[in-house]
Image 1 (tube, rainbow, N blue to C red):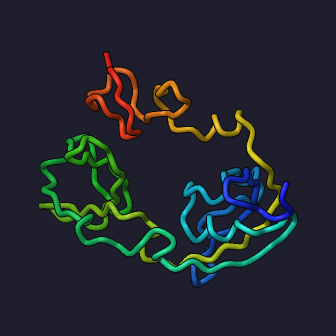
Image 2 (cartoon, rainbow, N blue to C red):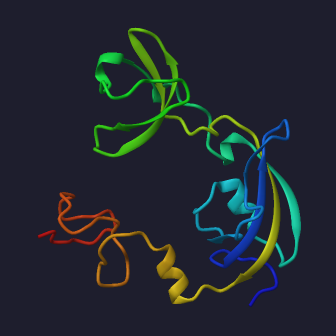
Length: 187
């Protein structure tokens, strides 16, 4: 095993994430360390990149600009909708998160940012979009992943037969291609 973390290594890392003002927004403090495959895009780019080259026991502090974190807010993801479109069972409040269905059928979380008698404003941007993030990292361990480790991180869905997972499930109406490049019969 290499002394330093390499792409694809299974790493265990403790972290504390803060904003510019020092407010903690996420931490593994008091929990198990975060376990991920380094350099594989499972994390935001800036965090993922920072893991590469670390040694077990090493600590470091990093600053991640929005471009390497959750991006800048996108105005297209902010929508005004009539209050009448909400179920009568929902009393909208600023800060409430609702599931919004996209034309593709996917459901995304959107935060209510404004409520009037006639409409509500929903923001589907990631809550950390536009923010500079600071992390304290503490590498616990790293190693080559086992087949069992790889299975834990594989996308859910049925298998292509060559070990690749398609990310869709039996009965899905995704046609004969699942995005993995293989043809499938979803009967």
